[in-house]
Image (cartoon, rainbow over all chains, first blue to last red):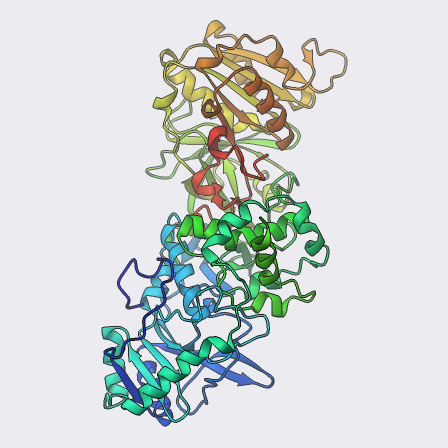
Length: 364
Length: 275
């Protein structure tokens, strides 16, 4: 990301809309040129429609980007901490001793059309990895990536509450930020690298006064499409959750939980992983992998000898909600829930993080 | 590109001695620059089988043969099943040390009481060795060891050798149950605290054992008047990375692989899932 270091992990402040920002026109048919330009330096991905759903997909010129996509099931973190990733390969040398090879460096990724919630998630990931002890893998990928943000006009999902979490209006970290105002895409340059790329794609033709007026009008009307659902500031979550420690408060909801872990997998800010080996037949070679797992998966907190420090579903559910609403803001300075609505949407028993936030917010 | 630190280094096993029916005592040649503190741990793996965290039963240069560290590994799952079959000159794959480095200067002039339940004696053995290696820095040292049965008492040679050092370290043993022939104490480990007159204001306690032991010992030690910052627990979890990332060792948002496993009760009091 080309934003200055340190800006990524700071708490979200709404980016003020100012007329003196560099806002340029990007005719829709120039999207292919943008893909082509980014493709020179990056692996380019964007939202593409597959049947009845949308997914982040590798794109090349000619592949239609679904810029009206109502979010994806798997979040963009899949490009920074993939669902399954080789940590190293191993093989036996002549003496029977194992030698290790690191995977080759991959191309940095460019994402086109990242919604505010997922931009926020990138800040969360950055803040988490920056503060964690020793890993440079994910922050390195974040730093090398190129992000094109995209404004939303309507909630993606019935479960979305991005406006309440402050991520609807979040426009960083992105090198370019787009508004689709129908007739044309308006693009604001948000970093020198962004200008470099956009300059190669268009003639940097400034948005016309009429277009800026139209944009302002839409932005002013936008909150009406996102009715408030939380009725309190997300910064208050940590305090509210503090009063909701007791297991009993979580039991009713946890009774519905199937421990499938889908909420963890679709969450844009989950970071936990498992490590396992995959060996060839005969065991002379293989690889060590890390793969997504999560706190809702049975056995996640089990230790050698069989003891489980977080054995009940109520404790596991409480843990997930606390991690997002309390531990992450306290430790990394940024709330771990972006309000994207994925976890509730994909939960087979409709457990909603928003409803739980609302409940704890109501408590005195 | 994944960072190199999750790639283990091959280390040669100097000796592998069956210890009990299911524990094997490994003396392993330490990788270069390997300088752990008591309470830290290493990730040990066999490529193709897996990787797991293990605590250190002795640190390099602290009563070990030159440049070696020691581990006591219990046969309990797939990985340990295979590791415990290895012999001298075989290779293990190790990375670390991981975990918080607790400075021992803060324990100077203090009395030490170490409570080890079962396999908990393995990590605490490195604490005892550290303390005996700097014997004049500390006051009285008590080692309290509990085991399920006399057969499961670990490190008997060490226990006998320590007991033979007279006032250097006071060794107290108890077992949960015993057959005929055991003339020692029978009872839970807290019962060893009964006869102990601790100078509570200047005693530091280290605990390692099964979860249930922590609850009872903590209560007793605090009731005896030990300061909360002087009661240290090793909170062993199933770390997968050791880098503060994988989340398996999280406790209330704390990543124990970096902020622990050795923590004082004052630091974790009030958190959930501690013991």
